[in-house]
Length: 308
Image 1 (spheres, rainbow, N blue to C red):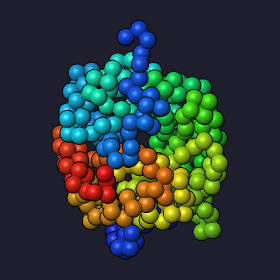
Image 2 (image 1 turned 45 degrees about the vertical axis):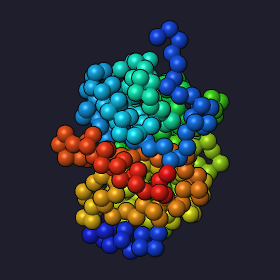
Image 3 (image 1 turned 30 degrees about the vertical axis):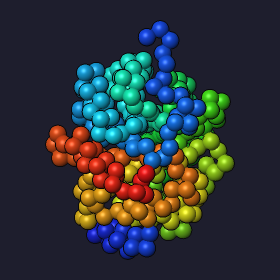
């Protein structure tokens, strides 16, 4: 059941008191596994979405963040064969020019954004995998679902799609994944106190499949849950993390290290969780301050030995 913000804040503090011609991708899966490790700082491009308005601003933003020390990005905004309005070759070229790798990306089936719960058309799978492979991405992450889908029928359609995506990805040496928000920590059948938590249902239903979980640590904590406990209970299932923070009121996102999430305890679980890449993210920053928020986050992260 959804907890109030005040109760969430109390729970978080309590739980964590203890815890051109042929396009070449900016990086391919084999190269990334050899040249990158979990300590390389990355960020989710969604953080700076307001600065990604055209090819010029996309290139400038990528280059600016690379100079800050970020080495990798997670993409978003793939639609109609383009990334943020750029063709896949042009977007890949912008990443390469900024010397940024992209191990994973967010890809959104249009059905999940609608208010109609139905079978998800699997024809999108090849489009997503083609785009991801072109960027050298290993993980194709499905990131969200409309509120209408947050019930057993909706999750069952999602599971069916993720399994199919995972099987198609396996043939390319890739994997599918799901990125959480807070709503997965409500019961699958909300009026049934014995119903499993939706996140538990997803984890159990997808066990043994080629589907991983990208844990957004902030949203887990926002829901009043302990990320450390989920990592301990499902070891090896979380190779990707979103690292973002919130202030004590829990409603205000802040640069990483300026909030209340105890990051040393979270990162102590890296090996158990199976962490391979983490991405700094901030969904909401003060007006025109998103790039600055990323800079503040990485400057703090550089000083933390547990993040290296």
